[in-house]
Length: 332
Image (cartoon, rainbow, N blue to C red):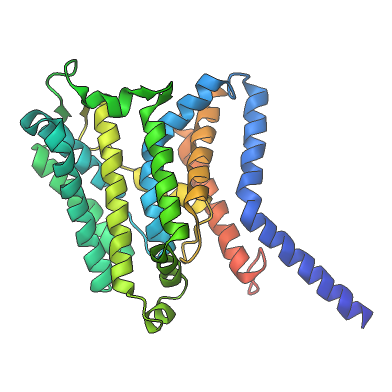
């Protein structure tokens, strides 16, 4: 009997360790990175460097906030990079044709129309989100090239436009992109954690069939998660266009991997039903500080791609391990 009790206690301890790693493993690794980078370069934790990292992460972070809703609902969105390219190019083009005051709402409407299309295909037609958004990635990229005629876009009068305030301005010394990022995070956090809609998103992602039998309009919830995601992409396109006042038509290419990495690092499960906006913000900052730290210690920028891949694999492994209660597969 004592042997059985000891065996049970050992299994409970192992499960507790696995759950601890799943919940906090990335934060432990991040703390180790921060300590290492600080020892390697004293400028790493300086105020200017920290503020610069947060500012450079703001555009990625804004997109990740919207994708958090999609992932929690049990779906994926791989179209956000090409959609951001589209919104940026449209904003720059319409700035000179309509003026910024009118161009901004028109750009938001056009971008959110794409999100509504994806939401309809995934939510109401029940198509696989991976296939739909992977196809939309190429389709929207083609739409962007068609719209721009294959050319990059620039604002004609860069010195005389107030539009630059979104990407280059500051509020009490804090860059506007940082203010928008954290402000939007606060609003969406309340929406997800404190409203009936937020509870429905968790329910749909946790068990879609049960949610449907409980009277939750599953299709409508999924539709609105993609609408929220496209709104965030449009906001990111606004920031990108305002920051540079000109852009290549592939400016958002490849952002899908970084966005997904940030959301997963924040604890959102690819299986749906878990995650928070606050933790997504932490995931975005983890990626930003790791990239910055690698550059400060003298490594080339492309090393970040390898590091990002390793971090994604680690995060997914810990997520799956938490679901099955052990680090290794019982079959292995």
